[in-house]
Every structure is written in C-alpha cells, then in structure tokens.
Image (cartoon, rainbow, N blue to C red; front, side, top):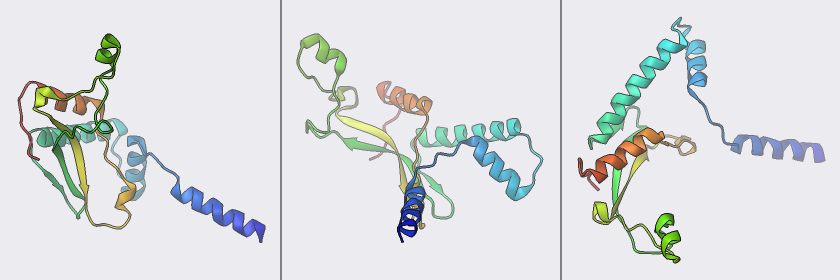
Length: 153
C-alpha cells in the first residue's frame, strides 16, 4: 500500500513539473509528425523570420489574434499605482541618496508597458506562458523612451 501511494505521489509530482522546450525540441517533433527533410538551419531561419515579423507587428501597436482560439498577443499599457509594494526600486538613485527611491516612469507620464498574452479558452492552455526575449523588451523600452509609439490600454 505504501508503494502505491508513493508511485501515485510521484506521478503527481512529475505531471506538475515545469518543462521548457526549445527550438530543437520543436524541430524534432516536426520531423516525427511530418517526416519532412528540411534542415535544422533552414527551419531556424524560417522560424526566426516569422517571429521577427510577428513581433514587429505587435511593436507597431497592433493586436495579434492567434488562430484556433489560442488568444491575443499585444502590448498592455497600465497606469502606475503609487503603492510601494508595486513600485520598482531605482537602485542607482537609492545608493546615491542613502534612502529608497522608486521609479515613477516620468518619461511615459506615469504609465508602464508590457507584452501580454491574453490566453484563449482551450483546456490546458494555462500551463503555457509567453516570455519575449530581451531584444524585444529593449525595443519596446526604446519605443517608449523615444516617444515613437503610444500603445493603447
């Protein structure tokens, strides 16, 4: 009886473990299901150009509605709340003045922006997340600082 309980609890732990997949895993899966003879380098080139076009579209301020009810990818604009728990510490200014100083986002009139994936209504979709690579986060920051684009809330 103890073994059954242990194996059952191990199954639960395994099913809740976080698994990160990379582009090689996607390529291997594509090879298995389609049997295509495309090389990995060609696949990577196509994938990167597709993602670049998608992120350019989103950075222009458009909403990208994904097919099969997967959700919407967009940039969210939110008003900064002056709650100390929500504010980010400006460590450079804090060290200089000897007291805690917070970022107030004065360059964006008190707003903060972030990439957002509004997930669709498919079972199991909550297990997934969207985290843009640093280049796109920095490009969003440059657009905001240079006042190139004002994104909708």
